[in-house]
Length: 203
Length: 203
Image 1: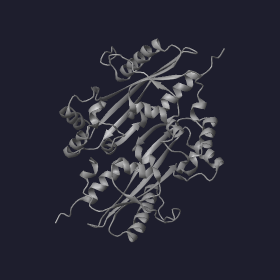
Image 2: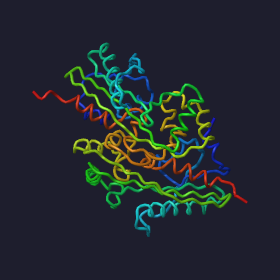
Image 3: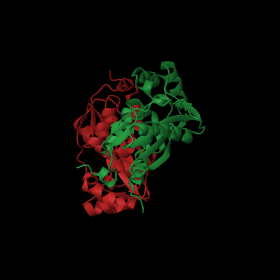
Image 4: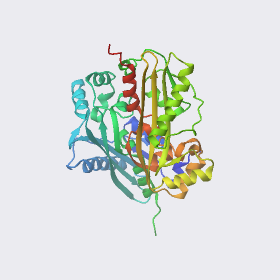
């Protein structure tokens, strides 16, 4: 009774090159069977200087790293970064940093970028693309930011929040773009890319 | 270890006037304790003629209906409607209707409106407001729409889709507004309204 994967012509096993439990949940939502492998790349090492190019460069590197080891499997790799006025917001280094990041996001609009790279060894098809979503926070007060930090949840998240968290959900006043991109994997973009790499050779 | 409700000054028990399992899940996400009661109002009976006024009228009616029976409890009521070019899209009456609705949404932008009414009997505070989200579908093909309808999921949903479904997730190319509003309960708006009705009298 798994319907959606029937529309995708994916004959080989799929590997998701990601350690993120949130990405795993999202790929599960589509009913796709997959295993996960963590790509050991240095995520601070990139040559691109624009957000969309950086996330595609890192997703590409992850896909190449994993496809070397599993040459007969379909590889899905993704990288998500958060930018505010072209400044990269990383995971907070401590509670003070988390506070500072969340207060910068307060009453402001930032951008979430995810790069996706997919390689299909059957037909050697490769797709590389990205998604961008604008996320607007309402004005936050000190008490709710401190309480959120006390839950511990901001500490492992780029931009110090998760839109799927209790507090994250009530901090965001609106988004413009793909919601699932903000969680970590833009599902519509991913689905369309999976459709493309499943296409049979035209000759 | 429930943190978010500590920021809301809600002393009484809370009733969610809704039968929707999706609304229940969303209110649970905030960590709020509540029970549910179904308001027996006629949802096809309203005098307003603009989307935002209709959803507020229906949410208000639901809140009043339940507060009559539970006079000492905080009541949260909500009503969500889907509009395409000011045409109300209801739940599909059969599979053909579901197909027709989804094909209208294809490659198009529609609007999701939720009205929220909250009444606090302790201080007699009452809040009534609404949220609007623009939802854009990519171009759908016949096969994916038919497959989605075969899953049965569209049949109990206004607009014949759920953005949190496998297919719904890959039909939506972008949204402009609150994501949780599209699922059925705009959490940021709800949180801010709950804060207001929890405020102590100023004298």
